[in-house]
Length: 183
Image 1 (tube, rainbow, N blue to C red):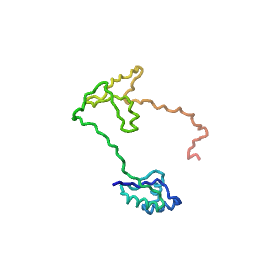
Image 2: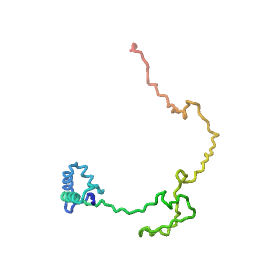
Image 3: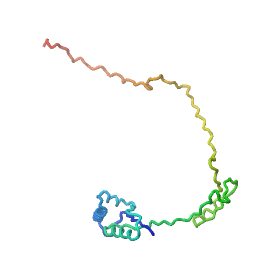
Image 4: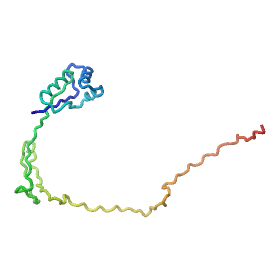
């Protein structure tokens, strides 16, 4: 049995007014205006999935009556049959690497026929626990001249804060001192 999904991309039925369609969808989905506005973002939205053909057609027709143009998409995907490799314990299965052996490619379709002239090595499967690549050479430490550097004592500031230069002294020539009992 094929399953279908209902997809909406913001398209309206010809002659429908967007405001009226938004109001219909808000009532249909019992949603607020903000959620309904997301339906008209232009993105492809799956409104419902895993429906049989009759239920999917019912949803599509209901949306069409509301003014929204939705499509019913078949969810069935054709799967390509793939021939599996033989298990490791099958006769003729070889784990040992063979040198200078080249892979022979037989095309399975027109697309793969383009790769028939590809010269590719036929790699064998490595044993469990074996290294898959050569170990990297150790990287030598960089050579740096640190002879002109020194360390500050513990607790010292790394960069002492410099005080800003003092400005000119204020003019106090107009100030007089007097005693309260002299007045």
